[in-house]
Image (cartoon, rainbow, N blue to C red):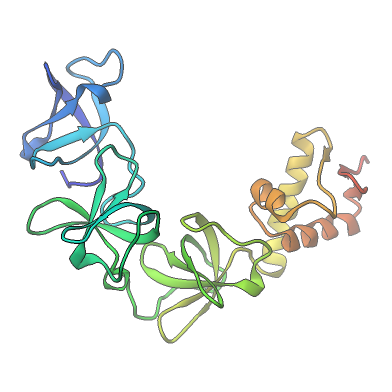
Length: 278
């Protein structure tokens, strides 16, 4: 019954403040009335997240937090109390505390800051830590070139965008390889380009060469077939539209489209792509 992650718990009984859930070795856990799904009765199993409230009691919620314990996220600062720390928006009614000792510099209301959700050993409460390097593996990674990896975009640098790779390593997306900038806090699938001796990883949002073009070409053909043989994409389509629909850069899209055109599988016009009818 680890604190700070989601669990499926059984409703044991009703009470004026809400429902009590079977928390195993942690005892009964209250689900306040405002979080109870309509029609829930004792014996039902609910997907809940639980944490300690301001009075140190275990409380459950059906709300979904923006970050679980032992995960990273980019959260917004709601308020700052210099003697205590900063309070962050993590998607729950109760704000997440970033204690002063876990900060790396001054913060202001409205700042976006990368953090890791952790359990404070002294209080057994969920708190945030902005000391990211403490929680990452800084030794050289063992990924392989072109391996797909999950990325969390944390901040922009003069070279590009820093990203946390697979919840474990630092990586970098270079400006020169990006058709359109990613959003801070966005979670993306990227690809390993190079493993550096300092433990960081050079990344790309697209596969290279034939490894990238072939599956993308097949994806375009499938989209054409699903949409009745035509798609509203052309040379002036924005990189954002292409990224949203196909998950790749405009450069990669045009390479795959060029392959399909050379193979006479599609025809192109100033306003759309059409599937070639045999």
